[in-house]
Structure formats: C-alpha cells, structure tokens
Length: 214
Image 1 (cartoon, helix red, strand yellow):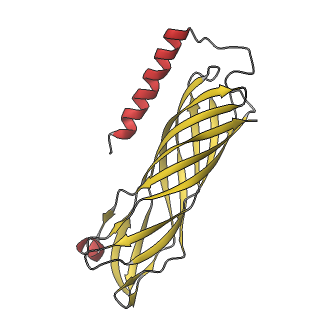
Image 2: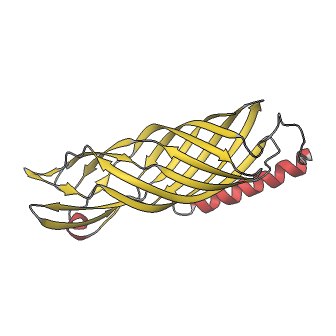
Image 3: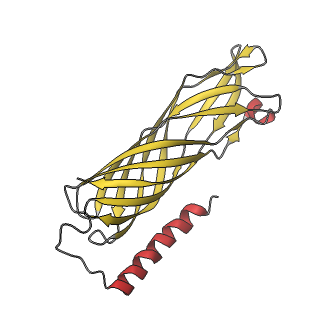
C-alpha cells in the first residue's frame, strides 16, 4: 500500500499528458471550463479509511489493531491562483480497537486536515492535482478497556498529510472526483497509571465523490 500514493501521482501525470496530447487541451479563456483564481470547490466523497497500524510497547505485544471505516467526507477548496488551491477536509469516523486478548472497545476520530494543492491542466475538463499539508487529529468518545481495566489515551496529535487525485468536469459547475490521501496520526495509552506504549494509526484514505464549483 505504501507504493500506491506514488503510483497515483504518476498516473495523474500520465493522464494529464494523455488528455493534453489526444484532445489538444490548451488553456481556454472560457470560464465555463476548468477552474480559476477565486473559485470555490465543494466536494462530497464517500471515503474508505484504512489504518496502517504500528503499535509499540505493551500495545505491540498485545497485537493491537484498528479496523477500517467507511464514512462521508466534506471538503472545501479555495483557488488562490489558477493552479494553486487550499483545501480543508472535514470528516469523522468511529473505529473498533482489537487485540490478541479480544476487543478493547471503540473510539471516534476527527482529523481536520489543511492541504496546499497544485492543480494540473486547470483550464481543462480533466484536472489531476497533488497536495501536501497538516492534520490535527482529535480522539473522542473512547470506551476502551483491557478486560475490566479502563484504558486511557492521549486525545490529540499533529501530523503531515499527502494527497493525489483528479477532478473530471461533467457540466458547467459539476465534476466527479477520485482522491487518495495518506494521513499520519498517533496516540499513546495507559492503564492504572502504567504506560502501555504508542499507537501509530497512519491511515490511507481512498475516496470517490462529486463536487461543485462556485
């Protein structure tokens, strides 16, 4: 899965080159096509959150893992230049935590993410993009226990985020979207005052959806 992000970036670049060659898609002055500085893009995606878990300390010994989740995601992009946009991503999900000794319970995750994006072929109908930024993750509504012992976790973290995707315009202000993100997030746990180690969740987020340009 670690090679998927690089492969998607290369695929986006190849797609851009192929479309430009086949269609002769030179920049257009027609504001009905493409995106331009000052545009606001709003996307609604269905996303699959697939944690890439690495546990340390006692959590690693216990084989702690975090399950996948499928949830909606809403994001807003403001184009500060024709090719450059800033995107804010909003979604929340609930995950079950498992271990070798059984289920440990559930926790909600809220990782608002801010990304700086570069949009290729901004004046065309097929528009690949890449992005990089930062996430602030909040863990909440956690009901974790190891047997009868409550487990406490650190409830926030900062981490980087990377993104690659493509928008395909299908009407004047409507487009479809495919998107892949890698988000780094982590927490740590303790029980009865004893440190249980760290838990890196670091999910891949695969999404598909629709968007509108305003």
